[in-house]
Image (cartoon, rainbow over the protein chains, first blue to last red):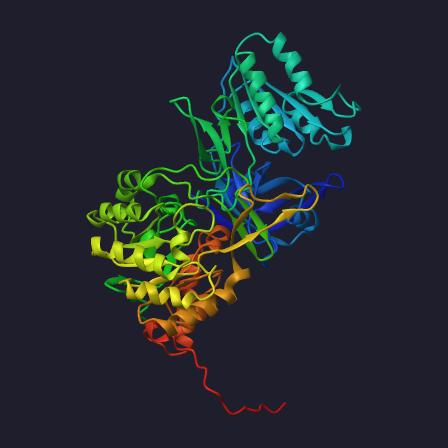
Length: 267
Length: 312
């Protein structure tokens, strides 16, 4: 059951001109959330923005063994993300969750390969922790426009994640999209592995296709325009294959946001 | 305090309904909300057969509102009865089924199918969806069309019949009157206002369907005016909606003439809004020494008064 919390902003860390990590006091949600689930967020009390916006939970905050809240990784694209960028300690942000279907974690000896594009890094911190508990070997293919937009690298490294970086300007790691190193490594890979992906939809499509071409299962976290996050409005639909060879629209808020890459029909 | 209201033969514990198309089939909210605490749950619009709806983008936010063009994606009436209604019955929900048709015969057939089903409490007749070409709104935009659909459905069901009216007409009160003459038990209004939004960078419409329906607080004053006009034109109850987001908004609609109200867009923002609305209504009733909420219906005071001066 989702909970609605008027969450106090504990701190707000600006990472770049567009990116920030906002920490919210929402232990009721943080203690329930599973990797890949999301929250519906609305800063301010007015009607601009009117609707909440979906965000993957980035980190679970713990203090002295107690769950204190959660963080969101946000990139400024509109009015809500601008307000989240500008929020200061003590502000409140309305936070509804946890919502949606989480990632399915894989066990050793299978490996977990996470593929993140830009702000699509968000669900992979909690997934890393869950995989680490299971002893699963993890790699993170992480792509951004520039090296200055690759965040949290030390933390992922400290969790034993093998980092494979790429930037569109070639400043850090491979030059080009995140699929460049992914394809190279998939060609070399031996043993079982599952690919997890979050990022822009064209990236998800490319990753799902690459994984399928190499006989690997994939789980992708999609981001569609969402009105409610609860299955009420039918705005966030995505086309999914059905057994008969056709396809049908599924609400990504309750049917996802995590889907098997092979189940989706890319527009 | 008595918050109950009557819509024809239907007795509602309170005037709050979840609006069609804004609450899925109701079961989506069963984990979060006690559905039996609502006056009624109005289902998503149902045709006889399943429908895929429009491709994304299906919604876009606009100032104090949103546009939608979902295109009535739905599972069809038979799957609704088989898959959703048993749970709604178990949860004690009062169920108003929103029915759609491409033809007069389809409306009649759905009404017939639902009339013998346990757990169906009323039919809301969708003659007002702005987002699909066939059927629906072509009936709701004319006096004859409205009269024909409502009287045809009236002949095949004992359930309360509630046509849902479009605001995209010159005179909504005359449509309400036609519905009343055809035997409607109530009318509900307003459906969304036909509208559009364009991305100036790409020059593309923001919705795949190009046009969509505007809802949310942006439309509330127009909806209040239309409820007021309909209340004066007909004797049957009027169910009001359009941007209701607070108890004050509920009360405003009721004073304008609504017997009950529906909440749509605001539920997207706050799925727990229902208890807040009820609390606010009860506080108002206490403050105004009201024991029966139904006494408020249509109680607008438009008399001219002597100016009262307050010395400062």
